[in-house]
Image (cartoon, rainbow, N blue to C red; front, side, top):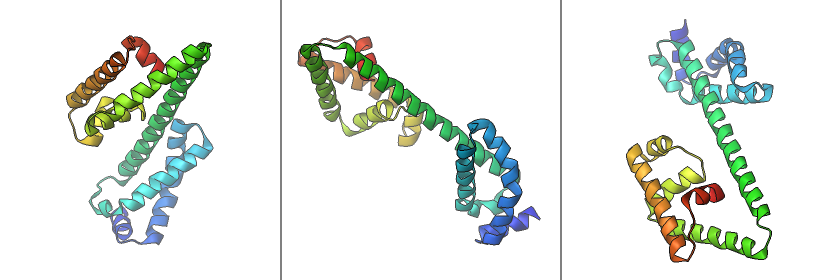
Length: 192
């Protein structure tokens, strides 16, 4: 029965897909709700899950355990949403830290100093070779870990870590050449 349903869906049969949707929607909803704890986000994840099923329908005839396959897709969607939310929270925390630090800089000189350092950091990043720059931006701006960057760029994790270390040295050297001696710890707190 399920094999025939999978074959029909793989052939683009929307009625068969509707049948699959009606069968698995009530099973997936409480499962996803445990992750999201939000009715709206749960509906979003359900939509994403079934969209992925439809987009990958050509795989359905080879699927041995349809329930496990669909739940795996739903789990991955939930984990991706959680990662996105965590990255968003990290970025907000960094922005808040930066804002608090900037608010502590009360004198015009301190404001100017921070603006100059920010400009020099941007300049140093823009002067990096393209791959190092891409790795650095994925790490700092997108909040990705070295393993995720390595996977996205088809590189080894060691290569990514080395590129990040080199990028930080480049920035520190650029700041030093401009007359700014700044500790790495201070630098990381202020700008990341």
